[in-house]
View 1 (cartoon, rainbow, N blue to C red):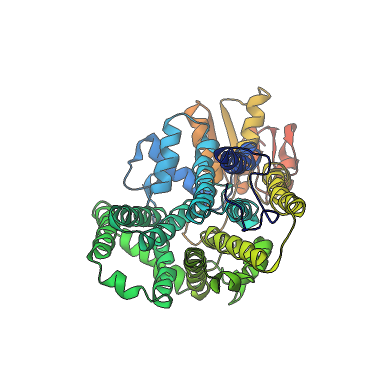
View 2: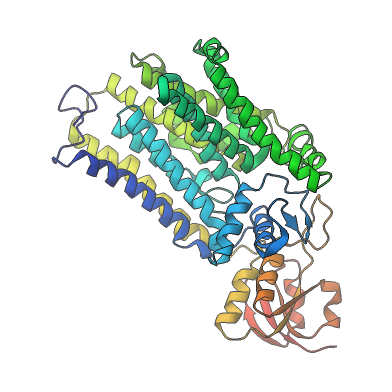
Length: 508
């Protein structure tokens, strides 16, 4: 069994004479199981998110119900607000077609992408560097990142966790391709192209963001001419771009105006102009990174130990992951629309660089007895993972249920069904939310669950509060703006909570 250092009393994995493959299986198996518990054990406890997640849910549900697989729709018409290519929507719709619970189908792709990213990060360090400790630290840093596992991240049905998987995939594939020769080099080149295409098919132009850091890496390490002079890289780049462009071209032929919508929403309109007042300043992403990923930021301060080290393989992996993450960070910082979850593809890459930096610093500057290492593993790896499981599986859902500004019709309808009080017709008084797309009475979470109820034969009618006096029967709302008024209208309450209210009223 390879030790971390030449000195036997410094660190040795096989202290208890356990087979090496069992050590590996225990490490990565424990992390993946912890991730799936954190993200899926209480998935239904976290209400569907009003923005982005519920929009994706509607796109996928309409696709699963027969709107077509090429063009995602909303309210039966091509969706020109959510203009990303439909890889994530395809996955969710496919799971819905398999009759998985709708909320599970919505969130399972993100959870599985997070588990796959954990395995990828761990395997790159474990087998690429033959360093179990750094591999474990990298995976633990990723799982314990609040920004990575939270809302709009691995916990919900959003784009960025899947994008992070594929971005990490093509960055690590380039690293391997540059280090290999012969047939293995070709395999890693093909892997680069496949992951790049999948990244673009997940979130459009954002899938290319990691390429900026790769170019920086090639320039700083003097490998750019080797890549330029290798015709195989040109083939990978050309075919990858052709495959990605083919979707946009075919989509435009079936959905006129789509390319203009992409330009306005993802390029000119979102990158060069502030969208929906989401601009936080030059230092926004650095502040968010410090907030969401404190241990990793501290470990990155030790990166000099890796960059000045004698091990070329470790140095190259630290360089390519750090520069790729930094390249994405630079692009995000220069954009005029800024949201904290855009950082998600950066985090797996920086986790690798931070873990290598920490272990190299320890090897260089400290000779620590094995008993102290065991305490370190418990304190800085096991404990953060346990906290992450608790935060995502228990704390986050519990806190969300009491937030009055979160629409929770799924929970309300489920409560009425469980209590046996759901009639064949229910009237929901909801005025929706303001939006830049021009939708009136916009509430995609309500629309999604109303469509599901329709599949069960229940008529969910949506009306504005101004029309409340014109309706009778079972009335409900989870619109915080309408709660007080609806409570006064109801004469026979069935459900009363801080978030939703339902009951019967007579026509006045």
